Amino acid sequence: MNANCRPGLSPKPSKHHDPNRKTGRLWATLIGIVLLGCVILGWVLRQTSSSSVSQNPLDETADISAAAASQEGEDSRRSTSPFKRHNSSAASTRTKEVIAPAPIVEPAVLAPQLIAKLSQMDLSQGSLTPEQAKQINQGLKDLVALGTAAVPSIREFLARNADLSYGDQKGGKMVDYSSLRIGLFDALKQIGGPEALEVSLRTLQNTGDPWEVAILARNIEQQAPGEYRQEILKAARESLGQASPDRLAGGDVAPLFQIIQTYGDASVVADLEKDIPQWEYYAMMTLAALPDGQGIPALLRQAQDPSAVGTPRGDLALQMLAQASVERPEAGAALVEKARLNQIPETAWRTLASTLAGSQFEMGTPLVDNPYAGPVNPAVQKYHIDEGNQTVYTIPFSPSLFEEQIQQRMDLIDQLLAANSNPASREPLQNARAQLAGISARANDFP
Image 1 (cartoon, rainbow, N blue to C red):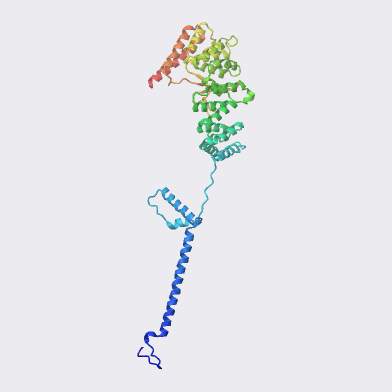
Image 2: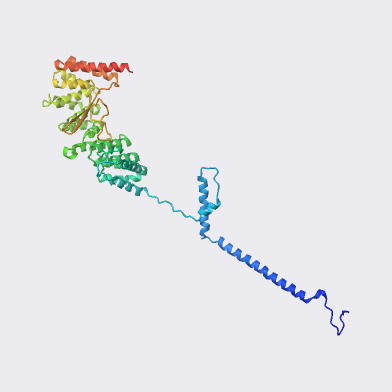
């Protein structure tokens, strides 16, 4: 028993067992526990919220940020500067912007739009402005840039036989082509490939316009050399067979004869002889130029025809024989024989001698885009024959020809002088020989 606690007496309070101090410590402990619990609860709530956000697969902000980061990387790769700096704030700003891409017009949709724009241009004023000419040229270039996607639209337009002519418009020379159809023909050639070639062939078979036939023939031959010459020749012969002054409305059929000159053979001779009454100059010039001299016998028949002797037709046949004599010795031999038999009229000697001296008949510049063009040479003389609307050019002898060709002509003149007894022939033939000798001398002076 404690000595300090006696019966009947209250014990003295000890400073170590003060009840008030014990109660204060208890309250402090409880308050600390509550505060700690609040802190722990707040931390748990924040962790839970963060976890739910980061694990949401449909978070739009996260997706846009990823897209922006990818674009930023792409921009960095495209930059030409090695000092491009990544700006996180700029990237963050771009995540809030969604830029819609520019709409892409498919070539199959754009091609008919270009054709419509070109074909619907108003030319009713009879003139073209520089801006219109620029639009036409650029529109045709844009069609070529579309490639094969433009071919169906071009085919559809050409099949309608529609056209716009620029050549007869004031300011039309600013356009690269004489008409819309001619421009589309060239677009097909530039695009190339089987589809474009097929459209050119189909148009060749359907058109009757001489210049269209000629230009299509040239384009096809350039794309497929030698493969479609029979089709080209057939198209030219059919167009010529269907041609008439009323149908052509003043058109020139020279391009058709030029095609026959280039690709013709013995099969075209009979048709050309039938064409002489309507296109005398074109037909005889073509006979003289046929490959391998296949038209020479027909020219001889024309020169020997009793109804043609002493007429312009007979004189022209002799002149064409003289023109062909440089390439075809049999033509020169036929002239010498006719001179020996005194079958060359006096009216024919001057034109025959002029031809031997170098003056050549031509039909113009072969297969050109501009139907109004002719040979560009100040010494060229142009003649128009109303019958058949024929235009021919006389081109002077060129000093650049080989000495051998000059000598061949001089030798033929000597043979004609020796075989011929007609006094009317001597002066023209001697003048022609002197002219050739002068050309030869000048050529030797300037090698």
